[in-house]
Length: 270
Image 1 (spheres, rainbow, N blue to C red):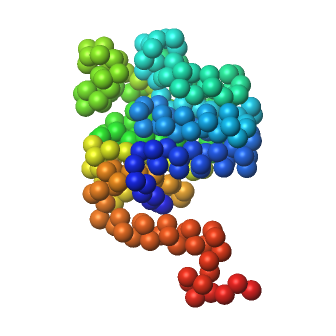
Image 2 (image 1 turned 90 degrees about the vertical axis):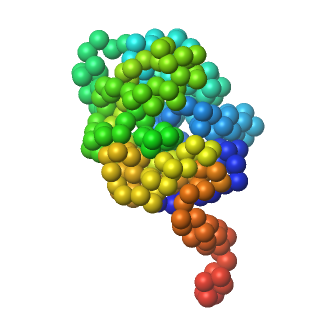
Image 3 (image 1 turned 60 degrees about the vertical axis):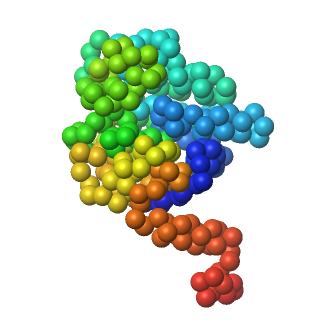
């Protein structure tokens, strides 16, 4: 896992947007897996800026969101479809028909979840999956104890997740108790994962995800099994990592290689 530590959340957002923008420019028909919540907001803001000021073109991009609350309509102010429209889709030139968010009002959830998996497969799979992380180390709505091979399905939310998300609803009583979520196994099939975390409240989860054992009790730890994961953290989220100095040295070496400064490694250009 590549670990990048930025000074603050703004730096995290800019760096994440850079990775996504580079992919969109390199592969205009790419498939993006997207996330909601407070952490990716800055990334979406930066991508909107790149679209408006640098002509970043989303016209051929296809998107799939990780999850959605059960029982909320697409127009409900706290639905994830509404979130994505308000904070991203309405401000870029993506084709609305190519934006997919799970339907929280599906009548046959089992059939619908199987269909969502087929839709992803029919697009050739997800090229880059954007991820946040819960304070207990969960990704998407794969709560502690979720199978690390799980697929898109219905999931009951833990009380901790309900408390964490109550700030968006006004009270815990208003937070839905069920959600449709991509499974851990679905996420691991993405070609690349981009994990974002900011703030001291995420430090324990980040430590357990990156340096702890792989366990279903911290579903984000399954990312250790993925061949291409980039974790972008701010200083507060990274503060408990024991190998933080090493991660910084890796990034310095990466920068030197990209800039062609081979002398740093005792090599001379031919």
